[in-house]
Image 1: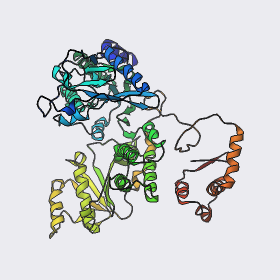
Image 2: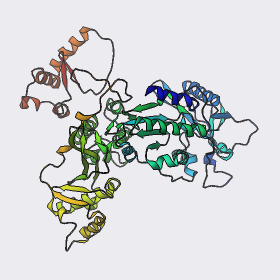
Image 3: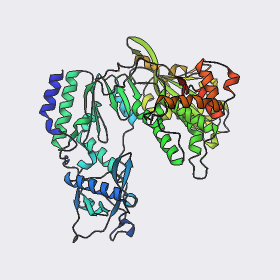
Image 4: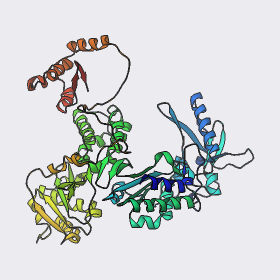
Length: 559
């Protein structure tokens, strides 16, 4: 198998490049920018360079020189007319710098391109039943798109060291993702329509059920990549795996999971200290909301403090909501890949704070029947819905869930499981009120394929425990996560420094002077279940203790 793969990769070796090698220049897909203003352009588009510190100046010059060597930038001569200039800045992540163009003014006047970007979760369901998966990533994908002469004049950047013109499409301009997606869809129209090729902007995924078919498809894709003069990043390729990381997930033909490394990077950060940090956390969490049961309900109070009129304050309720989301992220279940030939089960539930639903399916996994979740959805209730009764709320939840999950349920046979009897009568209600009538009409297209079943009690318990049938965690897999035979201790951050034994003795001694540390040490040392003692610690400490986030090792308390 490996020899056949190497032969194909050698045949199409010109399609690959490393970071320091020349970029591709994709043929036949030049990028233009259309503005909604005529010349002469508004003064807002002619902006001066931003002030830069000595460190930033050095970094700017380094980035500009590198891009000029790659053919992405050119120096604008002193005798050339310049109508548009965009300032650039340097952003830092630890010691690594990145040059960013402030294209906000240009984007304001750019006519938007509405070409659709695929939905990631729905796109990845195409991997269902795939036994072999290959992922590839274009090398500096946007920089392989050649600009038209008109677009080049609009994409001139200004820094302390001069004015430069982009020859290739930069990051940060308004229509860059839409253009790239359209271009890729144009290059691979038949492959995409057949369903074995997935393209999300510059990420390419090939899936197949047999190895021979996979090699044929890989060869076909690489041939087209060569024809348009695109270059693939060699270090970002994974060929023919059963399971790998793609688009922030761990994917296989059986399941879809969150990328634990990406989750860990966010969870190791401290609790958000301002609105910007909270919005960043919520944005990241929302990306994985299909894995998180009742995400919208838990996040409700956190979204509220991000309003402009609200003072940022982490109350006890918000701390608990934040902890619940973090816990859900670290314990997010694997999601089954849908089998379109099998029936689905839709579990719905509504409460005073929001609506929730879980789409399940019963499949044969490892030669055993197993029912697991396909996805979770949730949303907050609107102010006008707050006055609905329990029956109306549950019917609303059904209509909303059918609309959100139409991609899965259209043409499929499925059961709706609810703990509200009123939902069963919605389809055939004789004298519905105006809300019920509208909802009754909305769900008529599912008549014949949908069966509504009443089930009392907690209806979402069967969403747990998917980890037991995950694919093997092999070291040679790109989805490999190192494990240990020792019990895993959840941590909130890692700080490494050289300290001696005297330091730890001082820490242990200091616990005697701190009420919370002294009590928690006593509770954890003997695994004590003294509720009265546990309740005597401060509320914020009690919450973390109840959630099992304190651990005692060698007399030292860890959180």
